[in-house]
Image (tube, rainbow, N blue to C red; front, side):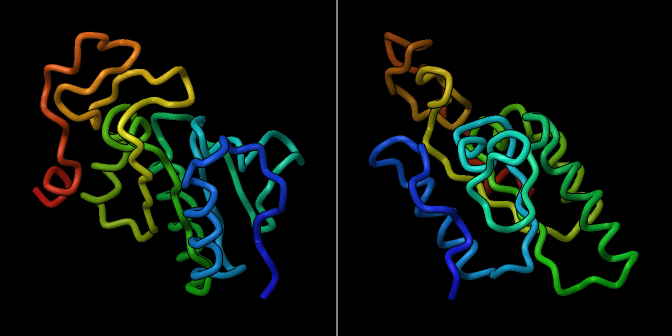
Length: 160
C-alpha cells in the first residue's frame, strides 16, 4: 500500500500526531478527504500546494471545521458518493473550545463524517496555552499556578 503522507514532515520530534495521521489514512485509504484547522495538524496540511497529504486535504478556519465537513459530506451525499470518507482532524482547541459550536450543530443535524480529536491537553502550537481540555492543576504558560477549572469531558458533552 502506498504511504498517503509524505516522508520527512516537520512535525515536532516525539509528537504522536503524525503517527495518528498515518494510521488514519492507512485505515481509511485513498478515498478520504481530510480537513484540519489551523493547529498542529496544519503542519501536515500546509499551504497551497505545499502539503504532506497525498489525498485531498483542506485547512478550514479554527472555529468551523465541523461546518466544512458537514457541507462536504452533504455535497457528496447529493452526488451519491458514499465511497468517500470525510474526516476532521483537530486538536482539543479546535474541538472542545473554539470548534465546539460547529461540532455540536453538525451532530444535532446528523451529518455523517468522522471527527478525530487528538487531545494534547493544551494549545501546543501557540506556546502551551491552557485549553478546556487541560487537566485541573496542570501548568501552562497561561496557568503558571496550575489550572483551577475541571477538564471538559467532551465525550459526555457530545453524548448529552
